[in-house]
Image (cartoon, rainbow, N blue to C red; front, side, top):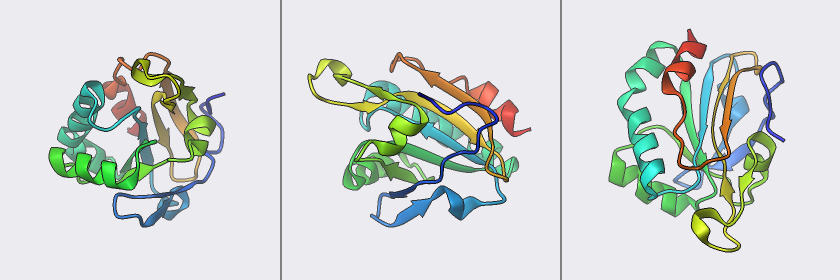
Length: 154
């Protein structure tokens, strides 16, 4: 079951593209925008991450740290970030634990039996660790409502 607005966001520690640990608690006191995406190098995920990249000035203006999370390995996330010029951390939830906790999982992703990925989701966590905005799609082809996410930072 997905976390909801008003809950305390569960802390996590995941490997970034360089295999360095990154925790939600590293950003205590600062708003964090978390985008879960099903898979690097898929068309909708690439469009989503590039849309976020192109809106970074707006997230920065809100004082927010942006994090992308997928079940991909750190090396895949690094190649994906390099290919698309993504400067925000992409974290690897290869155990799928954080994805299951936050937004649930897509089974048989892209029609591949046994492939489990994160549901596409967006969360805004305020500086005190409370979830201020939550959006989860069970359709991996639907992008987040970017304007709503930005508005939640205001």
